Length: 442
Image 1: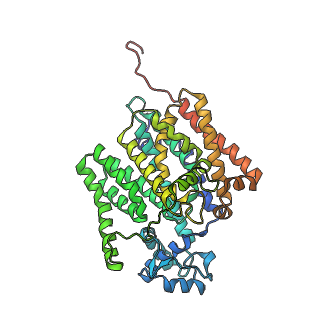
Image 2 (image 1 turned 60 degrees about the horizontal axis):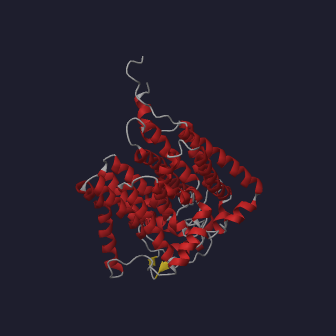
């Protein structure tokens, strides 16, 4: 018999512990190879976190001047550099949620080492939050698959395998190292769902409020979650969950009225581009397309046709489709300087659910397992190449270039990723359903 501690651990991590350690080591790889803020919006978010923590204000004009004079508040690589201010008038051009979340950590760092660069603590904050989201997501997928006590353990393993494959064969892996809003958005949302399933409604409400605070478009994730909660948990519990997002909305409206006089003004006004061009680009562009960066998740959507939908399936589909549509319609669907489809990252965990449905159905199909392993290996190899050279991959993420840049690294990633994916899927394939013993048998 398993100990009580082992049984409790199996609830949130049903696979062997060595898989958890391996997942952690791989998770750290993109940041460990270059533990620094790379660029894009990262230095500006870091500077805002510093201003909130030390200056206790959101006015960055003096802070930009300090960076040009040698301050490391925007990262050690930006000290002495004249940054182009990310301001609209005197206002910060980005949401304040992520800098607010990081500000206490920056304040602690500056109390211990005044004037030090924030690269390491901000990186560790993101890595911690996203790894927690990964583990919580693996547990959630297992519970979503479980249909009875008889095969619950096998379903839990299948869900965890699907979660690992989804994470390490998609841009979710690379973005765990960044100080962008996107990894914070998806991980907070997944942790909120995990808390809600445990009936920790106040914690879940706070996490959902923090999710919306990361970026206005995060509402496209939170609203389907609340609707699914109303169906599965009841209106009263869903109303408790809604308190967090509603509290943020009240603060958002109050701040807008005080600063710009419009209650629902976003930090950047929405500009309509070409939805068709954006949709095609987000699917197949060699530097942004999901088919290049997350082929397993794209094919995994077949899992939604594999069985009858639940409220959770509906919420996941609505979250992804809504996020994809808004991103495709945005004039800058490419997301500026970044790696892969950055703007879609918050919605990618929604595709892990149909993938889990598909993975569970491969138990009796070696051919399907081989196909899924090949797709996982392809996505893993792209992420592997980016993880080992994150700076150049950030500024030039065209997948053919990533793969051709260092042939030995690419081949090693393909072999390692293929082996890992096959071993993981083999666990699902050999899972046995525990049937009751026939009467009269000893």
